Image (cartoon, rainbow, N blue to C red; front, side, top):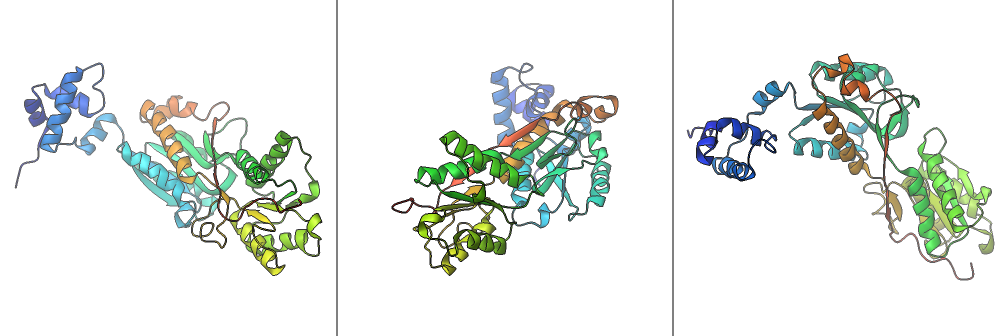
Length: 362
């Protein structure tokens, strides 16, 4: 069996010291090793198919190279699992692995899930939720660098940094999209106020009207829920028995399932989408929005982007925080002191076939 190449083999081939090889391949070459020598070392390592021993490297750096992720339901969700996928991709790119624990929406398991991951000597922690919501952050997350994705600390005065979607901007861009098609009478079917996403999306809708210099008709904003039947009944309330001149020409929805219900109500009433009524969703839900007939215009949540942004920020903190630093008020402790920074990730407009020009005469 061919002997596996060592750092000494790389050093001999590159004509440098073994310590130079260690510095370069462990990412500390700049300022310590000449650029020409760095290049020779990388070429020699590639030629010999050499890579540093990750276990030994972890021991030297006092890092496990493991990031723990706690999820409320993301692991079993076909939708928000993209957040973890985005986070994992960034972790792997930087030589880390992720370990995920799902609490299945049982908040009483949060602290024990975190403790289990801490027992595995994770270098950092991320908490991910299905749907934007405030989170009562487990206290033991403060023991290592930590971050939240798609949720935010319910302690506004002091909490963990969070990466969340820019829901206000998404609601505004949805309204601006149909306005650009000539629509002026635009309704908004929103979910309930129990989750912060709905009021933020409504705020964006109102913001679009304000920017356009038009008043918002309060009767056109209806909170109905989140499911298909809620969208159906909400649309029937707006459209059934109403003369063409008195009905909205576009209906924005707080998620794609509501939009499906609106399309079904239009068909029940003999209305065409988008010729009579344009319909806009929100989320770009996998295997739903694009597969709809007509294909659904929507606002895509930046799920993978949120995971990637959260992991990038967390790894930057992990890199500056030695193991145990949080016990003495080091960088990890600083992450949970003072006002928690909040990163807003833009949503993306996806224009498809369910939105079109305003009907003639409206």
